[in-house]
Image 1: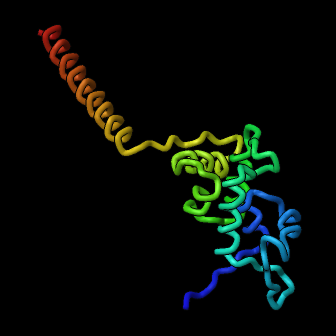
Image 2 (image 1 turned 180 degrees about the vertical axis):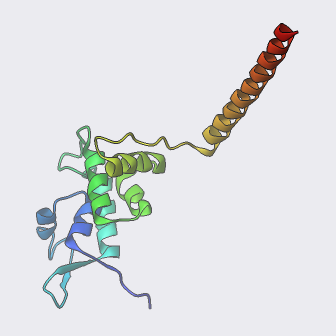
Length: 155
């Protein structure tokens, strides 16, 4: 028998795309949490994920009308970053591409002041490296040409 995994109310809210207080309204209906020894509600991950799938199917993820305003997915991802959820959960919950999650995480970790490092795909890295090699070759050729030119002038 598999060990059940439990989530906090905040983690459950992040997965469902709802507020923590909204999650309370699901008690005894869509979700059946248990209290731990410290009085905190714990939600069975499998049950939460099943209900999240129902909400997605109904088009109700992230809002009662199923329509997301600009920034809703970013806000949801930032909330999940705060909770320390793994990328796989964030991608599954938001339906964002992993590259977009990485981009949002870079913004989340770097704040307003520091420049955001560019995240390159492997193909982009190879192209960048080729360009850098070409620049270095050109610099060497230019240096060689200038040295030869100086020698000719000196003669």
